[in-house]
Length: 203
Image (cartoon, rainbow, N blue to C red; front, side):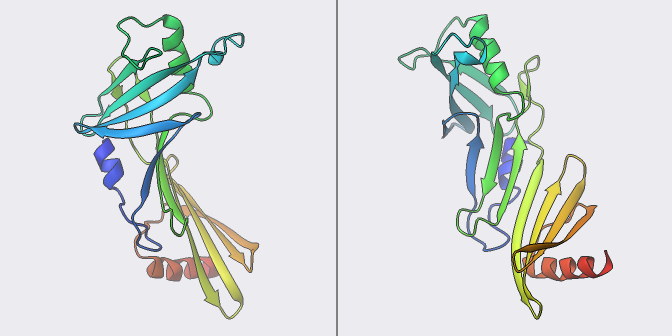
């Protein structure tokens, strides 16, 4: 999956049909720009990642091609000019920053109903200078239905890493059921609500 394919996977919220927002999730503040069919992510990286005694930080531009999965990393000086020579320490700090428990990831969500999002981690191959894939890792949908028993909330978590989903059903704010199943395609929410009801009966 390319970056373009990731972004086009879903443009509108399946719950309220509003346009989805796009973010880069990182360990620090970041800024996103589109330049010549490339996504430019500006990151602030602390040298503290390698040496606790150092309290300095430096800027990096991660440049992602929208179609080819190629990437570039541009290290900047204090005046935001590109560096011709980069220390091994800074390169190591960048690699540490983009790995670990909270890697650099892309995220689309609904800022209106706040009931839907999907995401992908960015895994760099430093030998080929390509992002391995923008495959979707997680997808979440939250929807509500009024019933004779009360208000039912359905929380669907699709985990594409293991091709499994978890459906949590809450009744009037209290967890009522948790169902594990195969990935559920999120299309029309009214159809999904009927599917969730059937799953709750036969699980």
